Length: 301
Image (tube, rainbow, N blue to C red; front, side, top):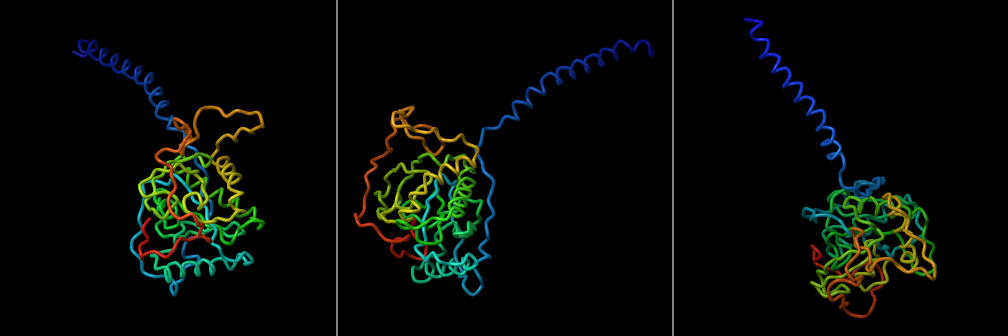
């Protein structure tokens, strides 16, 4: 009987070996395909001092839960319009003062900025909700959604030196935060205004720099002429930290390639012109400093 069963057993073994050979031939191909995720341009997360590093129990207030967007696609750079001659060890005290002013006299529910950077390059967590999450801030009226606010501690009007440590830290922070959504800091992004107090009427689409100054969205001189002049270098530095190729050098005779400006994802727009009406609204006077007028306890974004 054993001999009689051998042909059947051999057939089963042969089928098993055949199936194993097919598996060996196909599995590597599937594995290789699965190992090719979409190319992302991320950057290392810089060191960030948590809120507990500057907010003590005597200063902190009760506040509602944080609000979130789906992702961060743009960054607004601010200055705090405060004195520059501080010791970096005093930065937590100064941030507490900013927090008290915004949650006290202004009636806000928390500090408006998502991050604050001092002149020594130390990055502090600002608004509560988690540094790695898309927390809705209160820093750029009309454009708080899907953006992060980075405030440079000090005043950087024309002629004021901007510390290299500060600009490097802003670049590293922007590279990491924008990299979470694979956004090129040198690009442009389409945002929709939520407030007529901004440069654009509520509901108006606006195409702005991905890494913008506060004055790009609101009539103000923030972040000051000196820091504004540093933004192109900050953008380029942030892009390099994301592993992107350097921007091609431009000459007097060089002609731009393509027909449009890069968007937040690095893709060209159809025409290179801002989408929507793109017509600014609001009063022509610029507001000195980094903040609009006081708003309700939960500021309208």
